Length: 175
Image 1: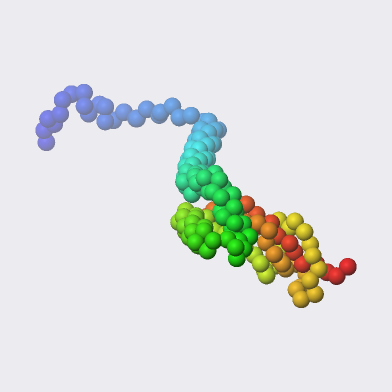
Image 2: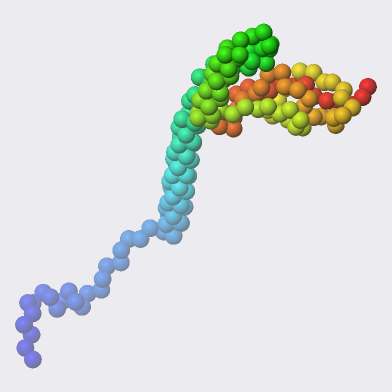
């Protein structure tokens, strides 16, 4: 058989491959540990970023949901005045005037409900310090203690967040 390869090629095939310079085992383990630490830092940074995005989305949603809080709080004294006017009306008061005030009051209630404002009027219900403020306690033998006897001023919530607590008189035990 005839050898067609150039002269230097056969010689290279017979030589042993060079041994590469490899770092020691300890250096490789140190690099692996550094890589793991970097991976952990990257995962923590990603989690922090995602949490920040969620917090921001929640804050924006709350800002939209409760943007009218000050506006609604400003309307409440007007509603209170109209309710007081209606409740103190006498037979001598012109019926047309009372009817007009009642219609205006209904319009206010409707407008407030459109924007998520609800009344807290807990007459006959158990006292709830989350939505009511007791201004007085009174004994009533017909009512169990801890029940709201009357409401001096209605409370209001905006999208289930308390705007103003109801001012109430609560029943108590006999002295």
